[in-house]
Image 1 (cartoon, rainbow over the protein chains, first blue to last red):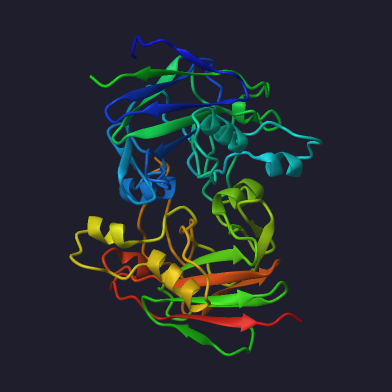
Image 2 (cartoon, chains in turn red, purple):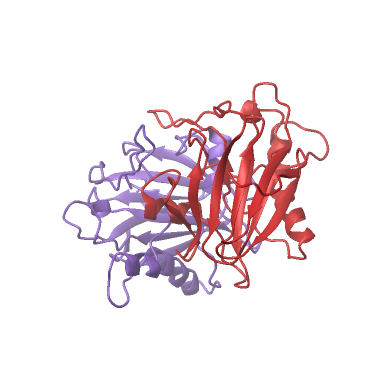
Length: 203
Length: 203
């Protein structure tokens, strides 16, 4: 783990970080339960983004293992999964929560959500709103059963575990500390927590 | 099965069909081996499309079962999986093949691909090119193993099986008879075949 300063993503909110090629970001599971929806967008290309469907074709896995790269929608390597001290249970197939999701769950009025958090965080860097791609849902546990049903599982990680993602191209990494408090995806107590990260400069 | 006329998608090519709400399309696995990448776009909204990540959150399954609906990226119901006479093995997590995929597989020169087929088919209807969403890969077999590795499996269907998709909103359905001839995804003989479909008018 880097000794760079730990930054906080307030519970239910998002943060965006410019990550030049060669730098890395460590996303830390301080509580052991909080899901962090994560996206990466290429700098300066307009529409290039980290694409989990393209990554799966290349790696032949639901989630890249340490040493494997995430690809963009143009199949360029954008981030490397450099280290993962967690059990490696991350989701790559469920859409980010959004206003419509909470409406369907019966919420009256606005509920904070990861899709809006992504665009709020981009706006904080002066970047325009965009369609929300499939996120890398770090520390999120979606078991795929043999009958191909999916479960909204409680998290299986432990406090202090982290993943280190290394930028292979200049990009913007966006994270959302998921505000989901209706399903147990952020832990059985349904109490979303802060997220945490460190930026590790290039050597 | 409808007695509407069977239409052909030439091997390795795409076709697009306008499907008004209430009409249906039957996509037929005539040979038992041919994968059909399938997309649906809302008419008149600019950017609404069938989204498998949003559909999975709603259905809690990798693939909708008969009676369940596919959602758009705005979580509106767009198509219903009305009938499926196949074993129900369809892929929803692998990106469409594209020019970059065949480059990475070592092909010299242009190889036909599903992403370009999608845009060619849209152009045939006078519709603009667009980003290629995660397709519904009908009859495509991607086993998810317990260690969460993925396999490019040979198809498990049988000749004549079909799925019937009912439009719940006015939409454009695009299909590509996948040109993949390097992996066994279209059968062990790696010989892409024609695709077939029928349009069933609303009652």
